Length: 421
Length: 91
Image (tube, rainbow over all chains, first blue to last red; front, top):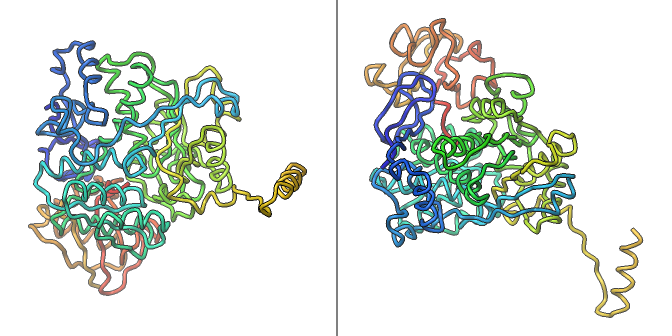
């Protein structure tokens, strides 16, 4: 086991590996720390082989994940298939998207190809495994939708009760996609930040593992597996730039942490990627703070179709700002129209149908490419974190149907009319 | 006027184990100052030396984040409920 303890990101105080997320001394967030010095005896080639011999899911990276009793991981291939293994999603070379944007090398990391169709399966797999180690019998979460589905599904797969709290105005597809797994689904009359506040209070009262509250230091580490996979899929090389949607800022910061950890160990070489964060203008506290040169975010009341990114009070906002600035990147915001255009652009050039969050990321990539911010020679990775079928309504306006009589002539007529438009 | 301040589990050891406290205060800032006078250790945990709240501390009045109200100048009615929570959860 490489994990050592939990450490406060603000004051450095350390804590044992319990279900704790806030520093008792200063209220700062706690983060998992590791000692990797003994991994594979310090032999990088051996460490690579060990990773490559692991299972086809995130447990191939269990040396870098916060589990105490060891994996479901490389040492035991059968156990690693227990539950609902996440990860090892495709990294696709998107030449037609690159061409449309005047770039040479764009890759799409399609994390919709996870068991419940979003990157949340990675973080929940890690949180659920740690929850079992800690003896919890129930999983819970505050969710903007994708997390709800992931927690409910992992609860079902592992035989744990689940309690899922969502804003009452969530897309119906996401509500059904969580409820179907048998979760205790609670629709709260309020926005995500109010759901989160309620759950923060509940976490102190209930004996549940709230994956993104009391288990957050473990949960958040799961996002590093996206960085590991991207690097491994590029042949243990780093991309030049990543474009990533930002809600709480956790994925964005952990992605950077994952790249940095592997670089430090010598598993990858070269410069760390430039990190561009993507937000919807209707909920852009991090992009606004970036533009104003501030070190912290002022909370907002979200109003956007990108509900999976609608966190008005982003917990990792200050750290996301650090990552964007230190990497030479930025945090950008795009309009509702640009989000829908982003969904259509990705679908029409790659065959990948993403939800609104992916529309936000694609729109930011397009914006950066068009403004000349991206050197055409760069190797760029676009992170697609969720599935288009979960936010069907958003893409409705991009679709046109021609209606015909069941006759050949009727089709010819309709196609001619369409071509004339 | 008397208001109730609900304390998060992380702060209870600094308040003699209490889950809530009743203090006087016409504004959030005044209520917090009176809370700190009652439990001096609390101040060191969630505020800087000059009394301003640390950036990972959220305060709510009747469930609404004070940053959407008037911050520490937010007026309080008799019997109001203040909640202090760590800002690091969620997402």
